Amino acid sequence: MDSKRTWIGLILLVLGVGTALAQSSRGDDWAADFHYGAATGDFNLGLGVKSPAFAGVLNASASADVLWKESPPPGSASGTASTMTAYSTVRAGINLEADAVGGVGRLYTGFGPILLVPGTLSSQNAFGGYGLFGFDFWLPDLASSYFAELGGSITNATADKVAGSPSLQNGFFINTGYRYHF
Image (cartoon, rainbow, N blue to C red; front, top):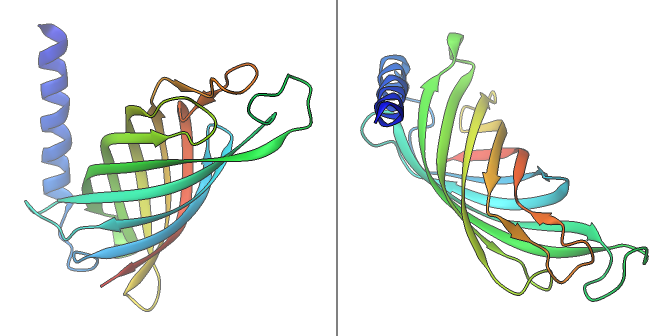
């Protein structure tokens, strides 16, 4: 019961601080992005979309990523020359935003579900969740921004068709990219 009250209190605190800080007119419309980064040691490329703000400080987002895991080819033994094998993730989430001091950018945090489609690395898809913290840095044209995100995800997925069954999309990730605001 105490942990439930703690979580409810933390959620209300984050929403209250975000509501107090958000006073923006820039970047409140639709946005699309291209990003790249690393997720638990796997290189990734992705595309994303962000909705206009609702309830003052919230927006919805979605992204699709292709990641590459360096490992022995599926079905081969350990010690075999490694190869890059692709797999995909799809995320959907809710973000809480607040303008940074001086109007140079925007801070945001988000969370939501993640679907992992392992391709040839595993015998089944996996569901999980993610959380992130990010920063949009406004570019001089005022219609676009550079962004960086740090976060974590958990799917409990493993590459069960690869020797050693390495983890897939479990742990720390970092993304950076370009976002255009419509």
